[in-house]
Image (cartoon, rainbow, N blue to C red; front, side, top):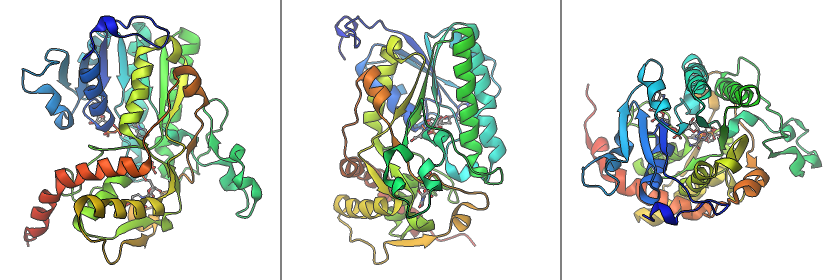
Length: 389
Ligand code: NAD
Ligand code: UDP
């Protein structure tokens, strides 16, 4: 690790070590952020979560080079009086805690709304009252559907970026009707963004809002039946990884026509570190963090993952590589989808000079190598186990 005296921010000022209260530190993004902070910076982390499996390698044993700079606090922010004290002890709070898997949005809308709005309220309140800086994780899903998706299918305007590129300070947030409970998550995230923005405007709270656009990589979600419930439905990377590990067809929801841009977690974490260490450039801003060059349909993603997995595992591609399923069958009543998500990069480029580097093929190759190494043996054992009668 570089010594603190050598480290400077984007304006050439020395970066002073700070204490960060990271809520949701045990999740996918939190685990990568903790790793980055321990490996490359002198900052201290108070890591809050109900789980710590994904950061265990950073907490034990006692002789790790960053020993004493990361402390895990097992707590649920819904009901824990330690939260305010931990925020007060820190210079910066980063809130990652959320229910954020689409399978939950329409089936557990109450938990989704409570987790993404109600449970975040005390965090915002304590930061505002104690003059602490907050970096809050929102989502690209606050944009909802693109304007272009409402145009006739053959309209040439659908090809015009003005109708689909998502801009932090211009694009509207367009959600489906209330019975489409998919939008419970996006709506709760939008309202917490508005509240944080208002705390900034009315009470001068220092904040940064992050809108991740499909960050993917190792440790994302879980593999059903191995390190998560067998009937659980994680996000697409883990769903497709699970299918590949089991030699099953990949399931394409409603034909796999939706489009996404995927960014490698390690690229995205570079952006978050720039936000942490350049408060004067990041405060008061909402940032899209994604890779506009990595756009594919979900069907194309499936096809690429099949090819990459075959390369890294040495296994033949399955005879039936994909099957179509309806969203009602896969997610249940009330599911809806974002059609297309291309982030505009102007603001993050101007403020932080950040650009993603990793191509979709490369990020899938390193991620699927990890998935194969971590899960292939465990899956074989699960498959070999006789089903209890
Ligand atoms: P994750 O589920 O892996 O991590 C969230 C963590 O928060 C989990 O470890 C969970 O245990 C913890 N948590 C949830 N509720 C808690 C509570 N009440 N008390 C304490 N801990 C709690 O998800 P992630 O992918 O790391 O996402 C982190 C944030 O980024 C979320 O706010 C999510 O909405 C947002 N986001 C992520 C993506 C992405 O591409 N990964 C996309 C859009 C938005
Ligand atoms: N999807 C799919 N098959 C799966 C899992 C997801 O076709 O096994 C689709 C899903 O309908 C959506 C896209 O993949 O169109 C991305 O889903 P994800 O859960 O990663 O989250 P989202 O990007 O929608 O927030």
